[in-house]
Amino acid sequence: MTADFLIIGSGIAGLSLAIRAAQHGSVICLSKGEFMESNTAWAQGGIAAVIPEGLRDPGDTTENHIADTLDAGAGLCKEAVVRSIIQEAANTIDDLVHYGVAFDHENGAFSLCKEGGHSHRRILHTRDTTGYAIATALLETARKTPNLTLLENHFAIDLITTGKLGMVTDDRVLGAYVLHRETGEVEVYRSDRVILASGGCGKVYLYTTNPDSATGDGVAMAWRAGADIANMEFVQFHPTCFYNPAASGPEARSFLVSEAVRGEGAILINHKGEDFTLRHDPRGSLAPRDIVARAIDYEIKRTGAPCVYLDVRHKPPGFMAERFPFIYSTLLKFGLDCEKQPIPVVPAAHYHCGGVVADVSGRTTLRGLYAIGEVACTGLHGANRLASNSLLEGNVMARRCLDEMLAHANPSRGVMEEIDIPAWEYGDTAAPDELVVIYHNWDEIRRLMWDYVSIVRTDNRLRRAATRLKNLKKEVREFYWGHRVNADILELRNLVAVASLIVDCALRRRESRGLHYTTDHPGLKPKPVDTILRKF
Image (cartoon, rainbow, N blue to C red; front, side, top):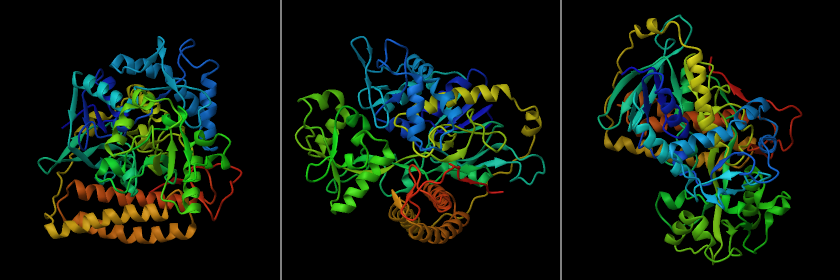
């Protein structure tokens, strides 16, 4: 399989790029599972944008949005990148409306809400299923786009590079080995332009708001191929994941209660009904996510309570059912009427601010490889992402990435296509009893990351995690090379790689900044510095 553009991932970044790139050549867009199983499709709150005057919150400006982003990023944002991306926010909304996204309106204008860290109401939304509306519109457009091949259940295993083939030319990407999950066969997908849009790694933690597909595949592949990785220690924990130990099933364990609920006036309280967040920040429940998540973690540890509560009982009857119908109805399914009872919540892993080092056009340090969306570390989010900037980034980076690729075509492409890429070598099929090892290691990785590398960290816990991960990497490596690959083995391999990168970065950061808080180094260093890992 050969294409002008090979896109790995099918969220807002991947599909936006695929639709645009298909006007300039052949495109293959891969999803390792179903197309709607992405962080984009699961996003509730909305997309942040300062829209034209007359439609926006009075007094809001693009400069305000930039300032809020820089403030949330705790000194580690790259201001030029922040400005470049946020200045394209209005164009992003035009794009999405063109694709068919029906954002909510009120009195003839966009209905805007406010979220943590934002100084104004600037979040456009489609009730409380904004991501689903965006993903649906993009997928429907993509399916009607000529020159675009969409492939579900195709799991990218590893990038193919000239270096891995033993060539002495400048190391560059040639394509990827891809597992067809339905047949079990591994195929070669050749392209001199490979774009990682594979999302985040929330499943590296025991509790997460992410779908099961978020196993850090893109970061792990890029690292194995030799690309630079940065700021892996900055894992954002969403403050309000529904807590109900009596409920069963993945939906109950990972159900997010959108930050927009707090933007509409919900308040975080403890078991005594106290608004404890005001002790940590004057913005209270609408402080940036790193501050609110730490406040909840502190309150739970201080009181010994299993959770805190999100209180919307002061809102008028019917408000939740009208403004947040998905959240309201889902909670009802679990036996909770949030207009009469406070919602029990705990923080859960939500978004990864680090990733593959990429510039504002998605270029990585490996020639021919691009990274856009959550998998990339561009400098937009710094040490903590401002709420609802992620969907914005995905669309803008898709536009920028295509412009970059078109402006710098590979002059030696014909030569590259003549390179002989060897077929995949299969191992032995694992016996059923050996598969238990995969599930055990998967569980152990997620538990040790939750216990040792969570919201509040210490050097001792990080060292414990590093020691155990070294052993797990060895076990996983032996299993990977000794058996025929399947999706479970591949995800486990990527999870242990990403977990190790997070711990390595966390051990190197000897300060508390943004999402990385350690009791051994509670202060800030005077000069913000990225944590960059280089394999070679």
